[in-house]
Amino acid sequence: MNQIKLIRKQLSSCIVYIFVLSCIIPKYSCSQTKSDGAALDGKNFTVTTMEKDKPETGVKENITFAEGYFDNEQCHEWGFTKGKYTSKKSGEDLVSFEATTESPAEGKMEWTGTVDHGKLKGDMVWKKQGQGDMYYTFASE
Image: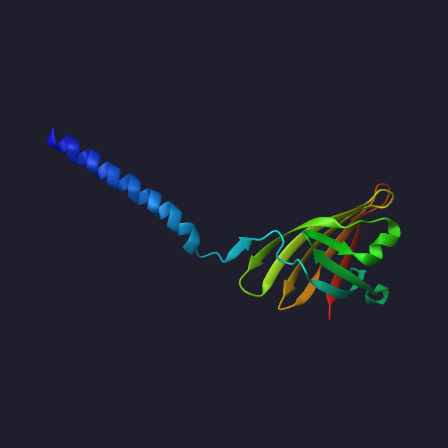
């Protein structure tokens, strides 16, 4: 009978120990990446956007992040509107993001990029029914 009580006590201790560890380990994991959906809100960038590997096609554009939305002002001309963005912060000065902007007539643009020490750079794929995907890069100075 004493052995059963001892086993129950040890089992209870193990359960408490596992619970405490499950609460502590996520806070002290090796990964410094955390999801932060609006980590770039309030940021504005002037970028040069160009077709991939074609610097002669480069144009200046304004990109803003506000209230959880990504917006490229120059794309409004083709009916593209701002789109929700998601972001992940890695360390102090690196944030990666993804966004999709859409136009009823011109399809959608899928944006991925990073802000590293205040500099924005990334890639965009313009997808429109009836045409091949078009690939672009963008970067701030």
